[in-house]
Image 1 (cartoon, helix red, strand yellow):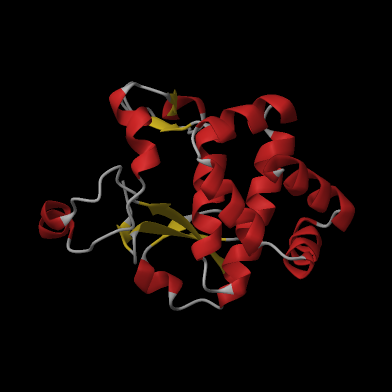
Image 2 (cartoon, rainbow, N blue to C red):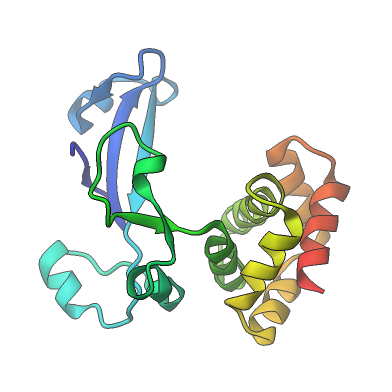
Length: 183
């Protein structure tokens, strides 16, 4: 499919102006602002990753919350979101589950820009995908009270303000949506 290996998955390179797919070697011949990348991170639903490392050559982060996507078919068809024809069984994570994954991963983000991005992602998932109440209820079904408390403890006003700046919206909107989620 034209991807090359990256840290935890695969990447494709495109020219920003023409959206033409280019090789990694061709991408290195252009300025950073002329090229954009599409990354597909591989995040297995199991922590037993030795066989995975043997096959793919790297050990990705694991997220047991993904198990329902693979075991119970709780995902959305990838075909609804791409222009090519993936197999019918190719699913992507439900937004509620992705929100839950953000709640669980955010406290462990050691780089502040990753934490800010997770806050921005979480706000966007809560407000722009489905009804807020449905998203909140769905996300909280997958996480424990301890997960929610850890996430709340990891978020400060500065990170909320930075996420709002990233999204180019009022900081109070981000603060309200995240506070409402985590109370």
